[in-house]
Image (cartoon, rainbow, N blue to C red; front, side):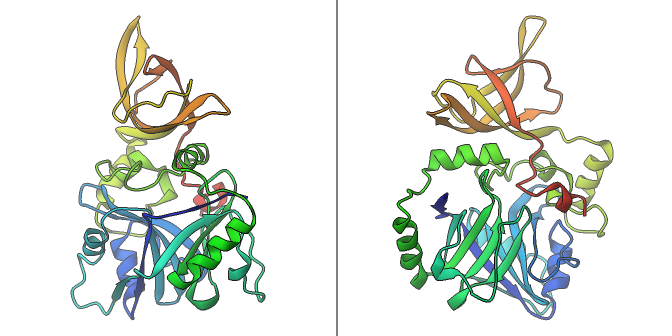
Length: 314
């Protein structure tokens, strides 16, 4: 069993007569064709194609959506989300009373006996008891759930985890799992300063068929050329000394070191005697790579955020 709290995550509920139409036009992915109970990744982009926020968007009802964000400033993200609201009838509520966990197993206090829930390689949502939400999502090498619960359910959920005598993953352990599963988080690893397609692959969080949205022209141009200037990758180094953020990655050309990118973050894995992390590499980077004088091995590329091949192809 794997579990941990998501202290930086927060939730925005979007509803109203024009909620579907507005989200479809504002966000980078195809919201209109999202089935009730399903989810997708989508970004609120700037005109330069850079993400002000990356959401896991879940459709609760025909005109009601749950947007889960891994981090960032809630006020500025809400402002960006509502940037183009003029006369639309849409309500956006920051659900400050909700707490987020991730677990590979559902706590008994959250299981609705009417449903049998299994982890999914895609994104899914169902309502739990007393205002909780159970969201199928990959954050580790084991498929699991984001558990979004009211504050009054926080202690019962923690009691369940403690009863299993399994400790929560540490921050370093979570980072190692994100690297292995290709699931970086916004905005600490999937950076707001990078074009969306430098961070995630193709259809993972963007549609190229739904029509116009802010930042779409930039993404279309990159897609038509087949490559972004940089790419986010998960990597592995030998040894247990982490790389500092900003550490340069080099490739050797004719005996000389050539700059190939830089490290975003990293963490040691004692059992494997290795360091795992994320880095942005120049698209042209090739050959043997190194960072901090150690061989740099790519372990997750391209970044699909845990979405299975079937979901990406739809």
